[in-house]
Length: 344
Ligand code: SF4
Image 1: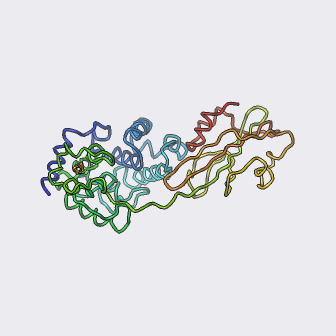
Image 2: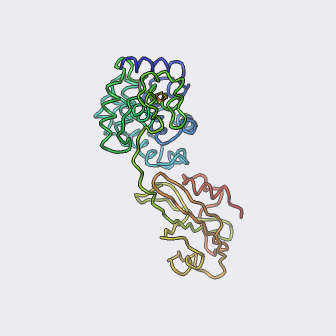
Image 3: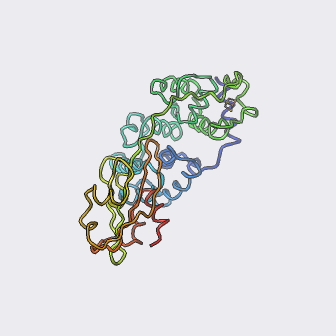
């Protein structure tokens, strides 16, 4: 076991990427980076991290912000509840802990948006405490090295991998060890085409020896994505002003802005839209020109959104949002894509 961690740490010293949150053990930076990097590639996350900490250099700066400002910076990253929870946690840490992150597991996991993964990352990286951090990269490396045939995306397997990660943890350098294991999974023991023949762990890697690397990790088949049909009504008044509305329900994109939406159970044509659904009064006037101007399927982790934008032109009604002002609001990516393609 010692060899495993020693080899991994040696590999990390030579191969680790220089990333801004690795330059210090500041819990604020580690926390923000870990939240951003959930479900996000490092190359994408890096840009968001730099923007985020240059706007909010400290947790005190962040705690004074608003949900809308934070969502605007988060725009395009997805999983927007992460941004809302970041702001909530900043306020709790500032008010309850004088801006100093707690270094006790049970205190950390009570903070909004902080679960076992983030708490363990903060505790090991910033406070040198022996908590294993298990992300997708770690699951893959452990599953291959120890030839674990339990599905990594099944709840029942969590304890197996947690125990394994704990038993391999380097107790003197838990933070470096955790980062090394994640980095090794990202750069060497990659999902496709892992670099097995030059790998520093290949002598004892069971999957490599058995020639079953491509069969690890085991995953159970995911449920099919839920398909939803979104119809955005995009009106323009005589001065090309329009309307956007904040999403308030506990659904995707809570807190973001969008055009008036009609969700249906199938794809519509314009007659279906006009005669089968209850449209706002401004959409029912004579002389309005209605056309389908943009359609795109947007994929989320568990949902497929078949989205159509319906243009309502010459609406004799005054709206409050100029086209240019829309980008000052946090918007879902599908709306940004639509605006990028809009030609009036
Ligand atoms: S030998 Fe291959 S599968 Fe095993 S740890 Fe190294 S890269 Fe991963």
